[in-house]
Structure formats: structure tokens, C-alpha cells
Length: 315
Length: 260
Image (cartoon, rainbow over all chains, first blue to last red; front, top):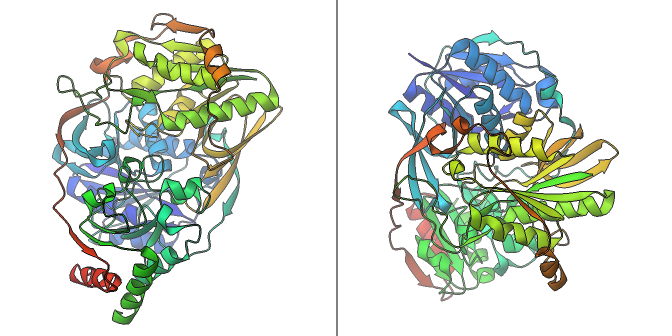
């Protein structure tokens, strides 16, 4: 069976859920090989990747890869594409994943597709475009298909793979060492799931006000991530990295709760492919209602505390 | 400092955006506006000029009507513009676009190239990284803060956990993210709008930038759109008015869907 390379997305050795989704998808297309880039590779990582079907694991764990931005990962993948001739390369469609995919496409003279939510036989990718208003089927016409898939597009399913390790040494070029990461500043200490990966997202808009604690409490009662509309991040009420929308993150969770968000296209473009959308808004005419599966017309400062109580009671 | 800011004209997100049924490319006949994140790029370019001196050149690739986006950038305060416009570029994908722009950038010359981190039409978010790859210069992308000291440049790169501090030596390619006040893009003043009308816009074609016609346009595309359909409409939802039990009703809905 044809080999499919899957770039492992990990932070400090912890594998992100999207990688398990990519391995699951890769199994339907061929034989998955995980590619580990950067330090932090352990037996735990090996077990996890094998559990989800990695037949091979290419390990390039030099610190040099993580210490320089993006380019080393593209060089590593390009060298594997050259030596192994895989049928395709799958990468997470995160901000960094897409950058890796773009550089890899140039290095290997290959076509690249981003923001895919599925890949069918013949590597035909499905992409929602224009904020989810149009569904496109695309195909790579030259080289090795490089496809970046959005988190939450596939349900990860465990099926054991051999997980045969192969150490890969990369001699990074000077060009790949151009941008040096000198410090990683971790501003958040919360244990909430990451916004783009979360199964449930609770977002607040202008209607919430500057105090976001009610949104955080609801999120925590559901094990959800917190999101915000642009009105909120523009006002500095919540940091920009939590912004959902056209100029922020795109999310596609199982459940999206929008509280105090009017639902301008700017916001909807980032969330309207969510499976289930629940709205709490006092304006019954706001555009967000057009995409609501369930909603309460009312003051979120009254509705949300009651909702949190009910969730806590029923747990 | 020689600063080049890449600016893209995109279909207005407030209007219905379409793909063309004849060749599956983005319909650009609709109301075009400057891409929102490009305004942040122009703002950051102007701030660099104000702090370190030099000149800000706008570079736009796009059809003739993209002049509107260029004028906006000039009205904000950029000094001059280069407009790469050629029928042969129609239908170019990310690989072709990055190639064509990199050729134009080599012709213009630069210390820093600044872009918005993505466009609202294609939203691939790859262009800055691809330009860095093509030009063989450091990639400093997703910047929420930029600092220059002599030939050294450093940024805060926005991440899911906060930010990474990334350093490089000029020349470099920088992409920027949206920021809250007081870092939002300035509005063009009346004086700025009047002055923009007199600022030079140099129109160039592919031959001027030594762009190989075999590497651009729909025929050269590395990836193609096979077909497209409107997304299926969402089913009609259930809406209740809060009569003191809105939270309970919402909880009951979540239970019925097994989220609780």
C-alpha cells in the first residue's frame, strides 16, 4: 500500500488530537507514516502514534528543528518526500501547519490544498470556502499531494500499527536557520482545551461585557474552550488569539455556544460549520439566529448562570 | 529602510462571494475592497518608517480595478506603489502567486516585506511563508509586535499559548495579525486622500518582472478546483423566549443532544 506521510503536531512532546485524526484518515488512503519533528519524542509518543495506526515513525528529534521557525520542518518533509516518494503528505491546517505545507510545496514542486475537511479516493479534497458558504472539491495537479486538514474533520479511531521507528538526520540549510525562536512565552495556565481542537466551544460577544468570567465558567462546566467575537478582542476584553471569525480562528466543533454575539459575517465565517449551534441573545432579530439549532432569546447574564447550575446538577 | 507592503484587493465579505462557473476561480467582478489584514500590514509598515526612516512601497498583484486597494494604502501614508497586472496572471494559485510576487520583490528590492497574515478570500495563510522560501530570507510570521535594531529584527509570533519571540537578520518577510486599539490601522485623512492622488503607481507586466509565463495562471496551477456547490442550508432551529427558565431549557436541549 502507498505510504502517506503525516506530520505530527505536538507541543513539548504532547501529541495533539488532530494528529490522531490525520492518522485515522491516512489509513483510509494508504499506509500511514508519522513524522516527528523536534525534541520530546518518548515511548509514550511512540505508543500513541502506533495505537492510531502509524506503521512507521520517522523521528527527527534534534532541538535545531524547534529552535527555528517553520523552515526546518519543511526541509525535513521535503527530504522524506524525495527519498520515500509517498503518495501524499497530510499536515494539520493550523497557522503553522499551513506555513509548513506552503514551503514544502515549493521545495517539492507540488500542489497544496489547505483547510480541507475530508480527502476521498484519488486525493480529492473537500474544502468549505467563503466562510463555509460554498463547498469545493479540489485536486493537486502536479507533484505529491500536500493536504492540510482542519482539526475536528475526522473522528479519531484507534487501530494498531507497527510503529517501526526510523531515525532521520537532517542537515538543515543556512536558509532554514534564518528565523531563531529565542523564547516561548506561555501566557495561559488554564487547563481548557485548545480552541481549534475543542469538541465544544463557548464564545462571548459584545453582549457579555468586559467581564468574561461567566463565559469561562460555562466553558469549564462543559470542558469546553473559550472563544470571542472581534468586538471583544478589539476592545481588549479578551486576547486576540481567542478570536473566532474571518480574521481570527476557524473552528468546527461538535457544539458551539454563542452568547451575546450578533453574528456578523465576520464571526460566522469562523464557526458556521459547527455541527450544533446554540445561541443566547437578547436581540431576537440578530443575524446569528439564521444558523441557530437552538436558542434562547433573553439576557445572557440571567440565562447562563441558570444553565451552569443545571449542568452542574446533572453531572 | 526600504519597506515593501503587499496589499491585496478582495471581494467585500459583506456581499455574496462567488466562484466563476466558467473556470472555477474567484469572481473578482464583485465589489472589491482592501483585504482587512493588509490594512494592519500598511499600518505596521508606516510605523516602521516613522521609527526608523525610509520609504514604504505598496506592491499589489491583481486586475486593473485593484487600484482601489492601492489608493487606500497610499492615502494611509505609503509613498508609492507598484501594480503587477497582467492577463496571464489570472487563475494563479498560491505557488504561482508567490513566484510572481517574489520576482516583483526582487525587482523592487527590500529590507522588509510586510503582509497581512491571510486574505479573506482564499484564506490559505501561506503566502508570507512561501515568499520567504522563494526569496531565501527569514520568515517572521504572525507578528503581533515588530522591533528593529540596526540589521536585527525581532517579532512576537502569536501562538495558541501566548507568543514566541523570534529573531532574524534583515532582509526578512514579516506577516502581521490583527491587533486591538491603539494598534488598529489609521484612517486616511482628507489630506492623505488628496495626496494619494498624486503619488506614483508604477504599472508592470510579467515581462517587466521577468516572470516566466509557464509558471503562472490557470494553466500552470499546481492544484485545481474540480467542482463546487453551495453549502446545504442548516435546518430551522428551535427558539424559545426566556421566561425565567431559559437556562433550564438550554440545558434540556444539551441533554437531548447528549452534550451533558
